[in-house]
Length: 447
Image (cartoon, rainbow, N blue to C red; front, side):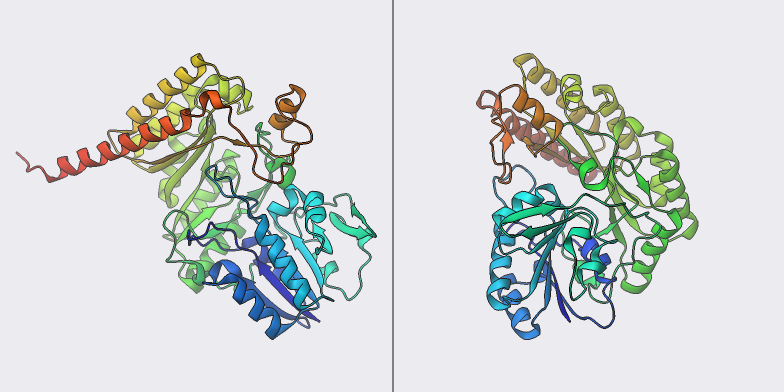
């Protein structure tokens, strides 16, 4: 049997940011030795479509697995990666029409049945985690009705099987570092660490716009700390990897697991750097100090709203003061900080916009003396099917239930459309003046 595993393009044209295909790498390690396996990450190719064409013609395939990780870009770009999935499926079916074509990945899981309908070349789709069922899909013949989380075609109908149990994180397979060498992804990125590390899966927060609980489960499943650090140590020893990003929805929850992880990193003396998304109201001076000792080099915050009104609307279960307190802690520590906020929220008023402006100014003032604010990223809300906020908008008549959310749909009423650009300009000015002032102070002779 010949198997071809493909990571579809997931970067904007010309972005050149490389992200290690962690999920596909773990699935690759489950492929039996008697299967003739070939892999291709199209993100590593100067001409990804020529590379796919050449690989299929040279290798052939009985089964092709497509990994579809991102539905559309970050930062509010009204673009979609759907064309990557469509084009790849068409090309595969044209070159090897008898091959079984499978698809999985986070982007597919978000809108699985809709994507099966949109891309008729797909034979099977896998929702959510694949480790427990992927080997079943590699058999010469499969009984699709008996495989949990699988979508399959029954004549003209698309059937979706109920989900099965989720894997416990002490049993997740190792990365296939032979098929996907980690060092092929390093030394290129300008913004993000190329290598991801899983500390947990699932999220119990239920933020209003978010589908993390749907993708990974509504309870956090914690990976044994020893296993996490063993993987980091292997990657450094074998491939020289010294910078990681934790893929957890929130890295500092629960606190005991996070602090145990930091202590293990300190005890191992790995001397590596890492980043992750932190939650402000679970953030303390003590665990920040501990994390710095363990190698933390940059913090990402995603409060998502600047005001108590917005925080309540998005079910963030934190306050403006939590955001500002966390900013003071990172400033005191002098650690690079990135903040993410959503603007132009439902039912905003002049009063709430003015309040958001005030809180933003306070945030910029806090970071200004140390110049540790790396970026403030603003977005409007990308609406996903079945997200709590999307359902609220439908109930209130602000969004038609028939809206096709496969394509990028953002909540962005015209009245406050200018707010995002206004806030971006203010942050840009603050960053430039802060940097220039520091440069001036550093160049002035000492008295």
